[in-house]
Amino acid sequence: DWTRCSWAMALRHDCATSTPFLTKCARKNSRWSACSWKSRGVSTAPITLICAPAGSGKTVLAATWADAQAQTSPASWLTLDEGDNQPGVFWSHVLDSLARTGVLSSSAIRPTNPDTVDTSFIESLAAELSTRPARTVLVLDEADHLKSRQIAEQLDTLLRNAGPWFRLVVATRSDPVLPLHRYRLEGTVAEIRYDALAFTGAETRALLECHGVEASEPATWKGFLWTSLMG
Image (tube, rainbow, N blue to C red; front, side, top):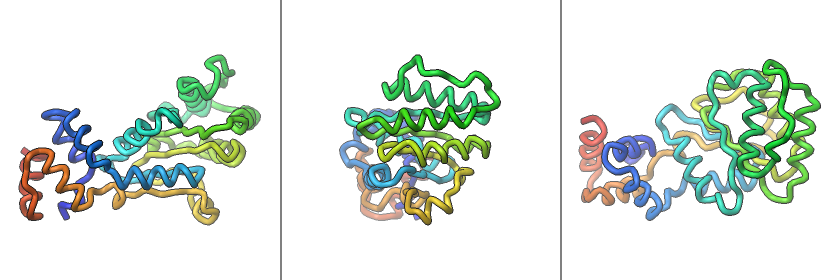
């Protein structure tokens, strides 16, 4: 179904020509139903999960949403890699991200041992976040790299104790090691999956029209997208 062209496919095409042009089209047509889903999730649930295969547009969605919210609720952004499975390393990077957006002081005490973090550190961080009068958003991008159950348990502790204004956004290719089953039962997680990231027919038509293609028939969309993306 070529009406379900992902963000990343469209972005891939435009990177070869003019990335700002796609950005202008995206803003004009406001993509954006997925952004609306994400805004509602962050507004109502402590954790928002964006889970879809590689190239589905998870990072594009999160970054577009974060950019739109920058003036009112700046998001602290952390892109993860395999080295972040050490608790001390992970939480040091989290503190750095929170400091860059002014949530915490840059002089906040960091973990001293890269391999372990004491529970009291998580409790202290949660207490600090719970005193903030406005929403605090932490985005973990490429969270599929995060395999440590110890870090997952610490994130869960933070979510349960950081107060009503703390929000965690997790962008990942696969379900994280967090206790999603419990979050679902509690109604504390908003999930955005592949189907929500896919373009609707109207959005596909708008994208093609930005490129000067008259998109009156699905067959036309298929031909244009295949030629543009593959050749």
